[in-house]
Amino acid sequence: MSDDNPPGLDLARLRDQLDREVPGLVAGPLTARVVEGGRSNLTYIVGDGENQWVVRRPPLGHVLPTAHDMTREHRVISALGPTAVPVPPTVLLCEDDSVLGAPFYVMGFVEGTPFRKEEQLAVLGPQRTRAIADLLVDTLVDLHAVEPESVGLGDFGRPEGYLERQLRRWKKQLDASRSRELAGVDDLHDRLAAALPTSPAPSVVHGDYRLDNVLVDGDDQITAVLDWEMSTIGDPLTDLALLVAYAEREVLDLRSVSSVSAAPGYPGSADVIERYASRSGRDVSALNWYLGLAYFKLAVILEGIYFRYSKGQTVGAGFDEIGAHVAPLVALGNATLKEN
Picture 1 (tube, rainbow, N blue to C red):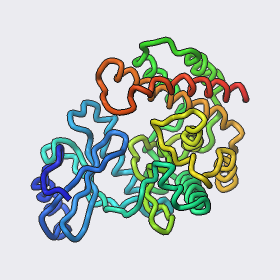
Picture 2: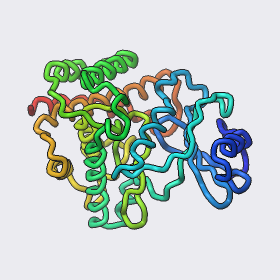
Picture 3: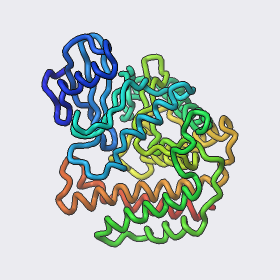
């Protein structure tokens, strides 16, 4: 671990806050390191030589607090603690900007690997890979089985009109990123808007559920579901559809997202959907619409990245290729909706 204060984390102030709020928790001098990954919030592993914790805070220079709401993340993780959904134990929420310059929360450190690459699973073999992928689906079923009111999350979101708001939100994002002609993207939006399904009973929705957002231990058990930035109360089938859409990366050659679904033993989309349906008891007959929405969402996200890259606002390896991945997503979304 580094002894230096990483950007956005003043260890002396953090120590003072922990000693004040949780006396006796920290036994020695704190060290910290930044964790790579996550959607946008900053994550640090902090230790005192005996124990480790994880600190989450918004990115430096954040201007949209609703997009990096530490209170919401802390609330949903705390609420799910007593349920069958594996989450890290929460330690402390600090909404006082004067401590670290932004709200933050501290949770317990959980051992495990966030599998992102095909090669990571390939060394485990097909049977273990299949078992991990099945457990990923089962954990999603467990999440969607939680009654929001029973864990104090009854007011965590507005399930009425959830799908309409999702579609509106991603259309707004698309319009903000328009810099070139994208064949079929408006047709995809219009098809989705014209065929909104009736949502099943609302549940806690993760919002970005995939294998590299969970930790898996050496016994192939999921030890924690992470990255709750997009969580709310909404339509559970949006989580399932996004999980399936990510698994189509080999069809679309989406090198910019996780490649785990290409590993030998990883179940195909039909198997994932069937396992979810049989274990949850939910009707998945309208899933093609949700898949269309997932492809639209992914296309808009990638177009936004391409837009920022083309304006010189984003630098880094691989960004030059992202623009080429948008059109195939749009085409697949339209093709999927035509199957309805």
